[in-house]
Image 1 (cartoon, rainbow, N blue to C red):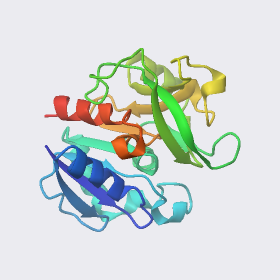
Image 2: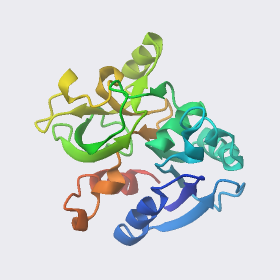
Image 3: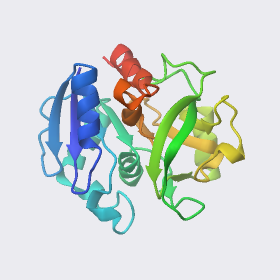
Image 4: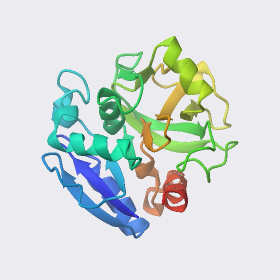
Length: 229
């Protein structure tokens, strides 16, 4: 598996992802600049967190116009794997690769803390090896993380089993009080109908190293390696 990590002006989690993939998981990684139009033969593209273009207009609204995004969209449409984390998730919704939008947190504040999420489906490569009864501790750091979509879109996501993760408490209970940003149905991540494009607001790459005393996020990356071929 060859990974490509895209850097936009303002990205600040690109090296975090590269570190996890290269140093912890021993994978080949290509660093892709936002002006590139060559994906360098990668199999799996990661759009990292950060503040692409300073989050001007809307988070991800300018990044979707970067030259590389045309190639990322082609890659996704050809059933190639694409994952967006935090700002990367915002870019995927702005680009139309994932449904819905990420709005300002309901408290109108930037939130940076550990939360818990649990997988909502076992039918994707990134969740297949996870325990649906387990609450995984994963950090969040965002000001615009409130997932929103029309009722029709939410119904479709549920019917097609496209919801990847939901915010929960330490015991795995999903409720309003465990929702850090006001996301509909406590949604923390979704995928597309083809199950090859994934988006999430929490940062599993920040919970994948023994040095951080938290490896809960590593399980998702291992599932990727086991099931993305």
